[in-house]
Image (cartoon, rainbow, N blue to C red; front, side):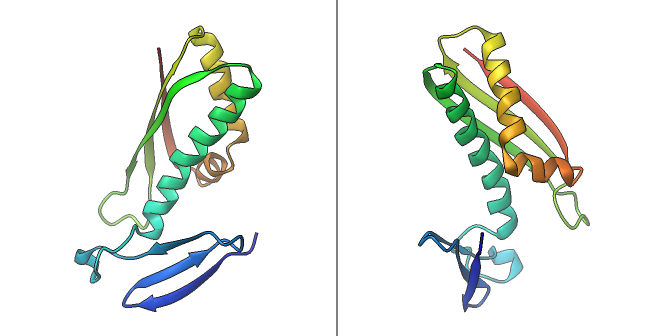
Length: 134
């Protein structure tokens, strides 16, 4: 995986994944910029949420479970003075017509296969994960 970042102006950068997909990164006004886009750290939290829903949907499909709705809400804590995130609370809301134990199994597999969750875990970031299934 080769990623490039090209400075645009002020504190804005265009980051490209090498497959023609790009995002803009910026800083909020309190950090001296225009708040044109998310910060790199916000993208890291967004990546965690997106990875969970993406992998969960793949595992569910492979388990022959049809999902009607799926959402991951990540509340990341970065205490004053901390250089990065120290804790995340994740609520996974899923609507599928299957027993809860099957959803829990899908979640266990998802967390094993989600590379972004692995990064957070290996960085010793405290994670509280709740599955809310209906």
